[in-house]
Length: 351
Image (cartoon, rainbow, N blue to C red; front, side, top):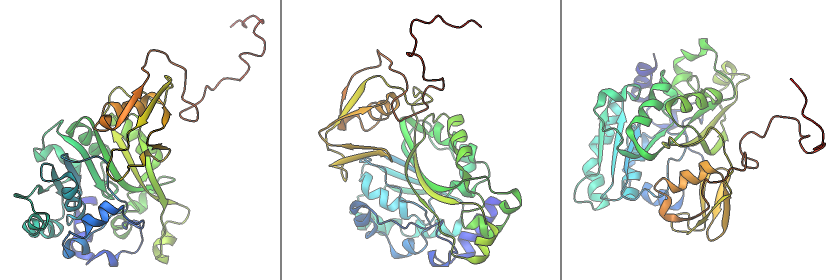
């Protein structure tokens, strides 16, 4: 039902973003200045057919090769095409012919608008659950993005596993989607309106973490989140008791990451050189790294900066020679009773 309903809902039922019944497939926050400037260069018909729940704007992507899963009418692809520049590329994948037709119709218009010698954007018709059938290059993409689309597919594990395979080492899946605080009941999952509104296929956050780690993304990082409002009374009644959230996550292809954040006494100093985040670099929702200051960091965060495209923007201090346990306020603390030092002279109890 999922693919057929998506094609029908976004290709025929909805005429534009104003026809949506909830704000699940909408972006509420104001874009960063660079994104807003790029949006002004996107064709009005492409913008009118845009559906997305979060801003997809990863940092430091000049010259990068980007794959956009569920690219729709092409708005995110054409924004990113300007940020990666003429030497970068953006490939969009979508399954809805009507959306792809809009995206492809304006490729030459955007090339001229951007002043590029040739278009750096292409669109491929395909099912993101079956990326292996699209002959996309493996270990190739610097960043894979997706905007409120993974919730629409049935086999979400297949999407995460394929994304891991297509990313180059150190690359990342940077995506926005809809999440729930509990699993949506099976009878509601086949409701065509709830599915089209990005609600019935929403990932229970615990299942998402499981999917991500099984695919190889060992330390998912939350970038931003917001609760979703459901303005339609009929839709709200069906989903009573379930809370929904729009959230952006970043998942790095770094096989050396540990299952939780370990402390090795490391620190970084941000140089202030990432465009748009010159004063503070935001790795995730609790790592806001101010330029010029020493910033203590766990081993996983170290690797997310040192072994990726961000390395040139930081100075690194320390190594992995000494382990100090779980990083404070990050990860799971030791589960045992806190009485290790209370009676050091007492003998150990027998088993």
